[in-house]
Length: 52
Image 1 (cartoon, one colour):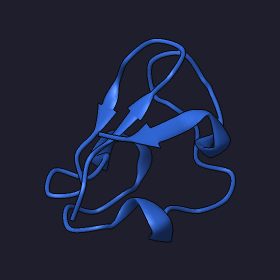
Image 2: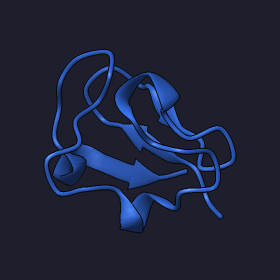
Image 3: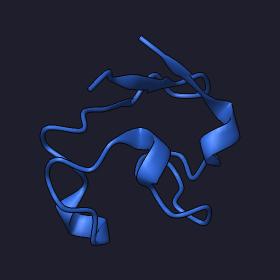
């Protein structure tokens, strides 16, 4: 599973860690995040992320 970086604030989504504070379990690939998931740091949408 690859990591994805926010092009606005450089936050990296790590699928092995997930985003538990926002209801995303560890092991959740970026492609399976809900469409309304946003960067937990700056609020950017998934369309503003790029693979690392």
